[in-house]
Image (cartoon, one colour):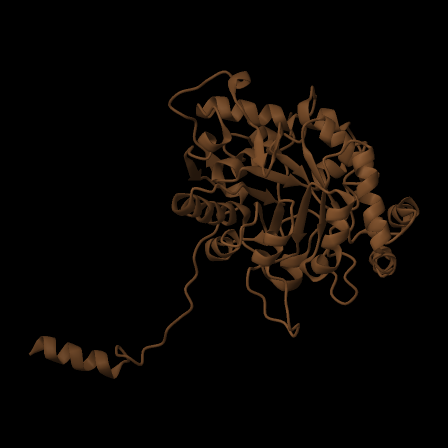
Length: 396
């Protein structure tokens, strides 16, 4: 009798099929909220192997330089190649629009802060020129760079022939969010499976943040995936659009798709965490979360060799109608070699990034990055503040 009465009352107050359904929220984590757990075994850092295998090439460094005009030009790309890494040049930047891109860079660097976005919009409104695209790639090759170039999906079909003919080694098809399925008014949209089948160089695609989007892109045959929406130091997409997933969670989900795809097919496709990395600690956390490499923008913009001369701005900053970025000052403070290999007197982890990777791998007992991906990671919001009272109060 009591049970019947409760059931009837439950129906009256809405405990039935008409009960409301609320959107669930799941917790996501960024670099500042997690920590790497040391391994049960340790090894000498110099015994660790950090190489990145991407398509037909192998690179000594699992660090790519971002396709941003303040970071990569042909000279920087060649210098980074000599140091063992891969730099990506943005074909839709000043190098694809101007015969003398240095003059355009001068304007950006010298523009007053209150009008720099308008200056960028004007500079980037110049039309793309196929001959400048080809000329830039040829210059990169002449300087000895491994040539990786980027453009958005909207311009890929137009530029890919010039890119291949000029002799590029990699093509990066990149936008804020890229998916394998895209709805548009174009009768024949960009299909990555078709692109991969026609283009004789590796295709890297980004950016994604989730398992299902990654799995669909992997099935098209691409050679690499970029992870991250809006975490970059110069990007404001998260503020403008409200879209993004913190990088640790985004990397974990993308890595899960890569691993499942590898289990099913036997083909291993590297993923690259792109954006939001401020230090060697963040870089190592990205690798433990499952990345095979990272892509850096603002850290490399601080190199003396960077074309931005101490300034950095994102690819979406010059958007003519909805800019999603800003020019930030990073100050040119060290050579590229010092940023990567030290020695350094900075204690904030922004220099000797390669040393940080080797040391973290040694503490986790990981000989390779794929072994480092198996290290334990914990939720630890106090990782930067626990016991650091003197540092936080400035008494150092």
